[in-house]
Image 1 (cartoon, rainbow, N blue to C red):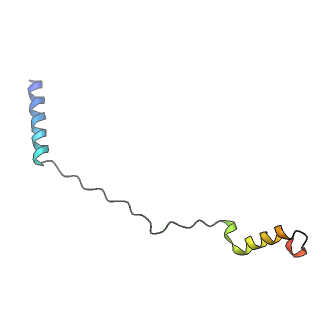
Image 2 (cartoon, rainbow, N blue to C red; image 1 turned 135 degrees about the vertical axis):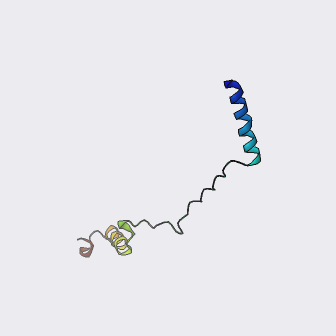
Image 3 (spheres, rainbow, N blue to C red; image 1 turned 120 degrees about the vertical axis):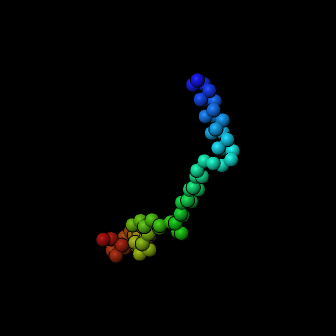
Length: 67
C-alpha cells in the first residue's frame, strides 16, 4: 500500500511540474552596484605632505626641512 501511495505521489508531482501547477518562484533581485567605489583616503594622499617629504629627502641639511 505504501509503495502504491509513493508511486501515485511521484506521478502527481511530476504532472504538476510539467503543467506548471506549482507556485512560481520570484526572480531574485540583482544586487545593486555602487556607482563609484568609495575612495580610500590615506595619510600620504596629501600633496603638501608628499612634497615636504621629497624636500626633506633631497635636502637633508636644509634647516627648513627639519621639524
